[in-house]
Image 1 (cartoon, rainbow, N blue to C red):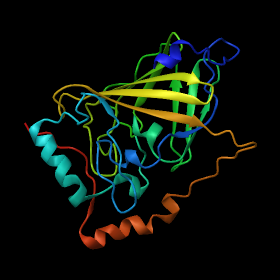
Image 2 (spheres, rainbow, N blue to C red; image 1 turned 45 degrees about the vertical axis):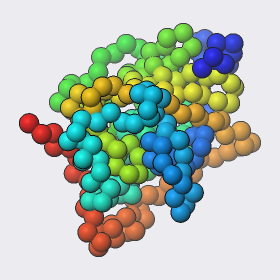
Image 3 (cartoon, rainbow, N blue to C red; image 1 turned 90 degrees about the vertical axis):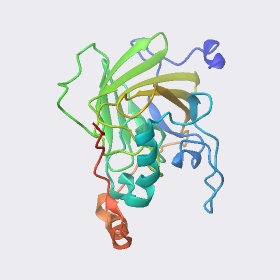
Image 4 (cartoon, helix red, strand yellow; image 1 turned 135 degrees about the vertical axis):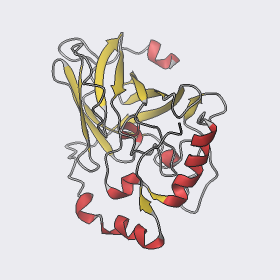
Length: 247
């Protein structure tokens, strides 16, 4: 992040950092498991993407740590069933994100499963607390040249990676997007969920601009080809039902 202090980002006509373009995650495989893990048969080993706490581990409550261990062996990864990815996974899942920046908002279009987010930056309040959405409810603001996205109202039928890391519908995510090169955005996301975690924790990752001339983001026909995902029920796996928090 020290690099960002000496960098002047390109700007939109209203003077905000210009994030418009096509972006993809730097380091394609390692965030299939957000914690540090050894390389597997598909070459997906990697260091932890968690920068706080310093041990790189998700700070689960004991019951939640056990649930995380059983998620992978019991349930189908929600993304295999073409469900929306939620926050912050929408930014670091494999694929391309397109960012549009009309006055007063940012629009994020993901090439996976028609996922999108509209993030107003006009100080409007969040929606009512009883509403739950896979992508949550996002509100943005600028702190200098950093875009801060406050995400509430999240659905609990979401995994943070392919091995079953999760949160409940009490989760609150704060994303911080900072450009420190014309073609690189650094993203940090702090996740707070007092029903699941012992403390808030933070994941960090980078996005690289796609500079291919005349690039086009094609439709991803995920739900239309879902037959393979549904076959996982033949081996005893079940669709992920969400989180039941112990009383």
